[in-house]
Image (tube, helix red, strand yellow):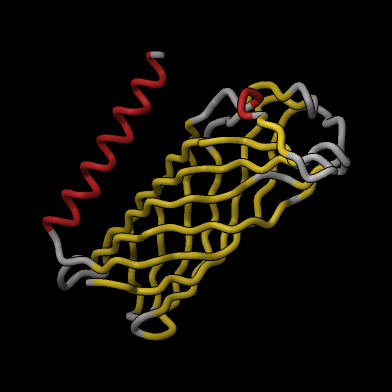
Length: 202
């Protein structure tokens, strides 16, 4: 209960920072959508073979470039599906995350934007899709619902209204201490995403 309250307070603090940024500065709002490649990092020998999984993601981005500077700030509120392909007819994990990355932007040239920062993600749910198409809730197997990662990425401005980018998330904390179905421990989720960002307001 205490951990849940701390998580809620941290989410609230980050949202307050987000809205203060929007109210205090000139910014542009963007819609980011793309695909991500995720995989598990773990201890132990899994009961089944694991391989990377490709799944969609979407986010609203709030971007601001400081006046007469090569630096800016980027905050996102997003949703991503992550997991791993499992070589089993009855195991197919799909992890649904609410993401809140906060990044420092660096503009080495006008059309290139580099991102470095951190991300807090909350595991909203985890499903196991069975071979017959039905879904089983396996959220209980992922006892670390709030996870943190470091990230780095690059955006290329293709037009005034559209960016293309890639980003890598390096996991810092576990999403699961012990997974009884796969027989693995200390599971982290590696994540790489490629996306298109459309500027929709300023």
